[in-house]
Image (cartoon, rainbow, N blue to C red; front, side, top):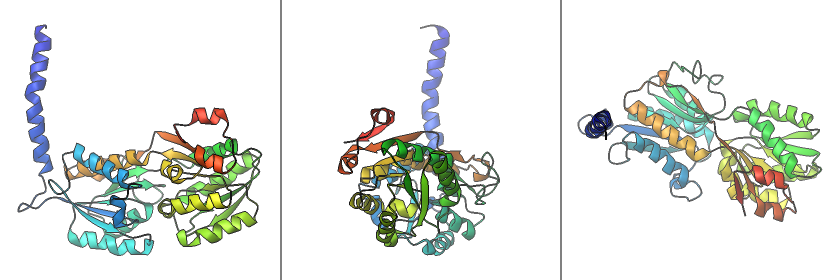
Length: 339
């Protein structure tokens, strides 16, 4: 080993404990009188989601992101969990409750949660996840420099909806009529619906929009879609659809309707196709951003991130139940095939 390599290696060895000590010091910043720094979690789901194997992977990913910055729940950070239980109207009160508790940062998991948190405070840092259009929603003045008390991650742009519709057409031979399902009380449909309608025309498809405000509407919506003689369903992004994805998958099978949605979790629940960002990767990054803020970073200076890696997931078991044969070219394109 030459002298330069030896000195470089020695420096790295000596720096490691110093870096660990600095990280430990950062992890303990914000403790007052022995109290742990506190993160406020503001979500649309249920307390049982954390232990539910269908959802626990995203909470594990969030914890892993926090851990990268030295934060472990119950040891170096406390988390105040607040759940809207599928009721958007509860989010403002839950957000105000977190503000009254004086949490150090709020993690808002949906557009509605982020809007509620923003209304509740302009001073406590907020990290949002899966925002449809953060700038248009007022969460930041720009993606590169949000400039306020909010930063986070945004959904892939509406152009991904055009790709979903293209995949659906490839999967369903002779597709001519497609139902587009949106939640009119949500935010994402504002950006995705015009692209869906334009893309349908480009692909030579007739499209019709059906509204669903949540699981209570699913049965009636699918009955109406079937009566309209639609041959497939494009599900626009929405947190209530994600929460009710098993019910949606069952209805799609009952009415023999091939469906495509935004996340792999839909396909794992039984939906034919899913194309979009990797949810666990987003939640891990959200954990990292929360950790950075706890370590002193300002959300105003942290760029809003857009998911760069997208995945196509095909449920072949569902295809067989629908009597479909997925083209080999589409199977080869898939990142994951569920047998």
